Image (cartoon, rainbow, N blue to C red; front, side, top):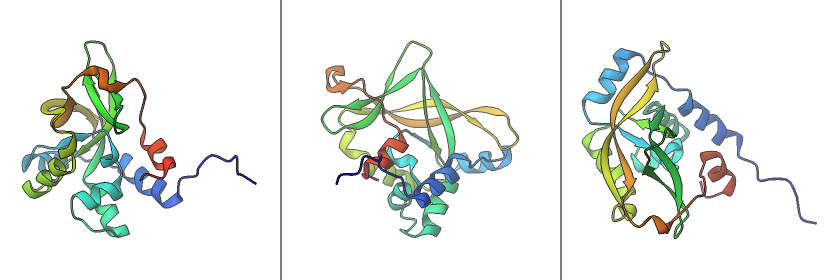
Length: 178
């Protein structure tokens, strides 16, 4: 008998993802987190602490995953939208003139080596994406909305290669790909 229940996300995955989503920095912490290396805005599997921990070489343990979550805070990239690359079904962002936004994560507190690892992780898509400097909006732990400069990979190839199909971290976790 085949189960008709939708795939379930393991509770520990939800806990770690919630930890990352709810992480907020004070204004003072923000200054220290972004001064050593320009942060990255991520909108793909790097939003998940266990993926980020592996990429940043923080270890494949709960402690490493929790440390990765401390490197992130929820962020919004305005005037862009997220779509799926048809060939590999991975997300990308496209610049837009309309008032749309992409929810993602700001990854900060990076060493130069960590920034290189993020670049290497996204290397397969770099032929079709360009690294751009953008402003993303974050919320401080005091509740203030702030704009922060960040790097993001933006689609720069043929738009016909894209599908108007959304991508969310929760759907990605449900798929078992995470």
